[in-house]
Image (tube, rainbow, N blue to C red; front, side, top):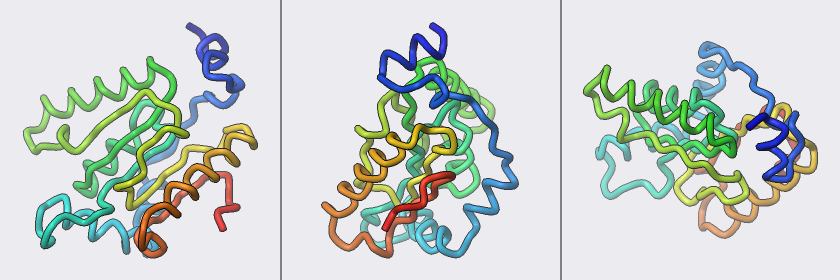
Length: 176
């Protein structure tokens, strides 16, 4: 199916599914920002089991994970549980294939840290998210607004999230 055909199945414009690239060095610069590392470090410790009990928020969640780059990079670079949500089935299949290939190439447990879902961002599970990474640069404005409202609702329903979750958005800055 073409982008138009598959995108229309979900009620979004084709441009929402435009594929772009994020260079690893650019992504890493963002992920190493002090506001991000302040929540990533406890997530890394929780993943390694070095915290007493398990941190409630220990995942990097990528909304619009496409072929899985940011999700895989989070697991590989930081050793944290990383979950990607993407609507386009063929992109999820590529992401799953890449994760399986990594599992065969490395026996370091990376595959167990990565999960991909073919699901709308508006149905994502954010209950364990320490970092919520949106690939929203080309998303329609109303979609950004809808996802923002969904994220806010999910976070407001949870106790003590103000300092334990970082939201990274390429486009939509109205998070307050």
